[in-house]
Image (cartoon, rainbow, N blue to C red; front, side, top):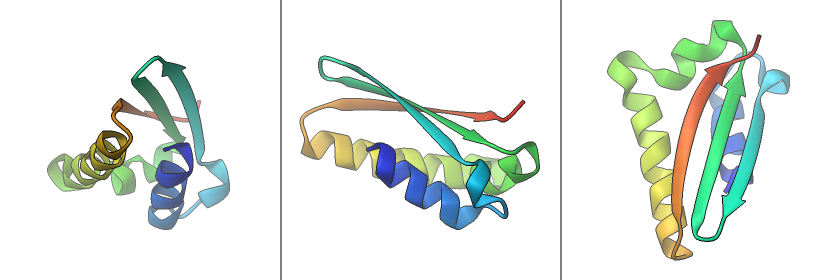
Length: 78
Protein backbone atom coordinates (compact mmCIF):
# COMPACT_ATOMS: atom_id res chain seq x y z
CA UNK A 1 0.00 0.00 0.00
CA UNK A 2 2.79 2.38 0.91
CA UNK A 3 4.50 1.91 -2.45
CA UNK A 4 1.21 2.42 -4.31
CA UNK A 5 0.59 5.80 -2.66
CA UNK A 6 4.24 6.83 -3.17
CA UNK A 7 4.09 6.12 -6.91
CA UNK A 8 0.77 7.95 -7.33
CA UNK A 9 1.90 11.00 -5.33
CA UNK A 10 5.33 11.26 -6.98
CA UNK A 11 3.72 11.26 -10.42
CA UNK A 12 1.49 14.20 -9.45
CA UNK A 13 3.90 16.63 -7.75
CA UNK A 14 6.66 18.95 -9.01
CA UNK A 15 8.99 17.97 -6.16
CA UNK A 16 8.90 14.13 -6.00
CA UNK A 17 11.88 13.81 -3.65
CA UNK A 18 9.88 15.58 -0.92
CA UNK A 19 7.14 12.92 -0.93
CA UNK A 20 7.13 10.76 2.21
CA UNK A 21 4.64 8.04 3.11
CA UNK A 22 4.39 6.73 6.68
CA UNK A 23 2.54 3.46 7.23
CA UNK A 24 1.07 2.16 10.48
CA UNK A 25 -0.30 -1.38 10.62
CA UNK A 26 -2.86 -2.52 13.21
CA UNK A 27 -4.41 -5.97 12.60
CA UNK A 28 -6.64 -5.36 9.57
CA UNK A 29 -6.31 -1.55 9.52
CA UNK A 30 -3.63 0.32 7.58
CA UNK A 31 -3.11 4.01 8.40
CA UNK A 32 -1.14 5.93 5.78
CA UNK A 33 0.16 9.47 6.09
CA UNK A 34 1.20 11.21 2.87
CA UNK A 35 3.56 14.13 3.42
CA UNK A 36 4.19 16.50 0.50
CA UNK A 37 5.75 19.95 0.10
CA UNK A 38 3.35 22.80 0.78
CA UNK A 39 3.55 24.03 -2.84
CA UNK A 40 2.41 20.58 -4.05
CA UNK A 41 -0.63 20.26 -1.75
CA UNK A 42 -3.00 21.63 -4.38
CA UNK A 43 -1.80 19.12 -6.96
CA UNK A 44 -2.34 16.18 -4.61
CA UNK A 45 -5.73 17.35 -3.36
CA UNK A 46 -7.07 18.67 -6.68
CA UNK A 47 -10.07 20.85 -7.35
CA UNK A 48 -12.75 20.21 -4.74
CA UNK A 49 -10.68 17.26 -3.48
CA UNK A 50 -11.23 15.12 -6.57
CA UNK A 51 -7.66 13.81 -6.86
CA UNK A 52 -7.46 13.02 -3.14
CA UNK A 53 -10.77 11.18 -3.40
CA UNK A 54 -9.50 9.21 -6.40
CA UNK A 55 -6.31 8.25 -4.54
CA UNK A 56 -8.39 7.10 -1.56
CA UNK A 57 -10.64 5.07 -3.88
CA UNK A 58 -7.64 3.26 -5.40
CA UNK A 59 -6.27 2.68 -1.89
CA UNK A 60 -9.61 1.29 -0.71
CA UNK A 61 -9.76 -1.09 -3.68
CA UNK A 62 -6.22 -2.35 -3.03
CA UNK A 63 -6.95 -2.79 0.69
CA UNK A 64 -10.21 -4.63 0.04
CA UNK A 65 -8.35 -7.06 -2.20
CA UNK A 66 -6.20 -7.98 0.83
CA UNK A 67 -9.21 -8.06 3.22
CA UNK A 68 -8.01 -4.96 5.07
CA UNK A 69 -9.17 -1.39 5.65
CA UNK A 70 -7.03 1.62 4.84
CA UNK A 71 -7.10 5.33 5.65
CA UNK A 72 -5.07 8.12 4.08
CA UNK A 73 -4.20 11.46 5.61
CA UNK A 74 -2.51 14.12 3.47
CA UNK A 75 -0.33 16.68 5.26
CA UNK A 76 2.19 19.27 4.13
CA UNK A 77 5.85 19.12 5.01
CA UNK A 78 6.86 21.58 7.74
